[in-house]
Length: 146
Image 1 (cartoon, rainbow, N blue to C red):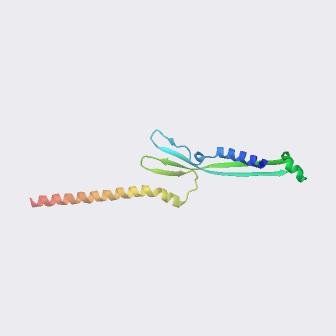
Image 2 (image 1 turned 135 degrees about the horizontal axis):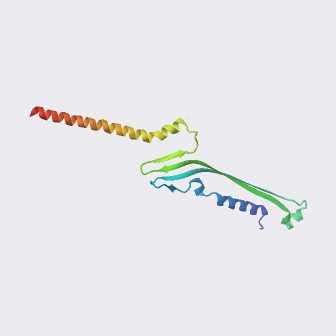
């Protein structure tokens, strides 16, 4: 069976869209800074495609014999928007959104790792002070015995 001309239009347009949009468009190539930090861009990709055609003969026998009476077109569009940057250090991973619109929840979630670190530091200081206090009390008790 002979291919219809609209198939050629559609496959050509889709091939060009396929060349423009690949996985590196969404998750970009990582960039490493001299201090060892790696930055990975994250984007949102949206694309659309449309195709259409018409045969211009009113006589059915002409349609079957001559496909030159076909007219059609196709088109597509791509929209790429940066969303965030993934920043990877030796001790942490952060997602930095590009949008200035961030909710209170997002800010709280971003602060959780820092908060946990601070709470651990304070808890360790309290434990160390109590251990030092007990050691001092034990040393004082030994001095009194002597």
